[in-house]
Image (cartoon, rainbow, N blue to C red; front, side, top):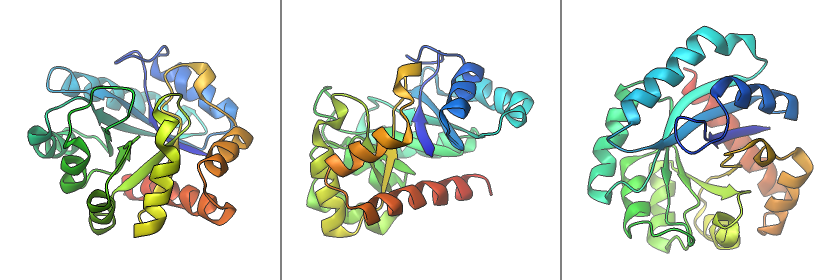
Length: 216
């Protein structure tokens, strides 16, 4: 299993990086992205600390640990610039907090994130045909999330990905130990969203592909 969207105490998560990674390892994960919520006020500080953790402690775990960010509630006009700055600052995976139905995310966030070529558009809500088609062109993966609330539109995201041929990934958006769900519940969430077993396997392969790209 791979989870490329998690949160630590550097944003609104409950765990320091070491405990999050240790718990992910015990739960059976082979790779974890540490992607705390970020805007201009905290992104550089957060990345600096996460990168330090990965360099000094990451190799002690039987888990590939990937430093990253989740650009969150940033005005769409600034998402492209922040994506570039995040990568320059050392983010190996860039996620954008998409237009979930349970938060007042600014309209246009999905499109700006896809245009910026981020790695993953998290919980993109009622993503449009235009956005899903552009995600294919830009190589942006759309997220099927196991997190309550954000998951309300998983079925729509799955259907739009199938319609346009967009890549899917499955993430927990983990904020607490209980969010690191096991393989069987991940399977249930994916199939409940309408994925076929073959599409589930493809989503897992997409996550592995992102990990390989991040580690180059």
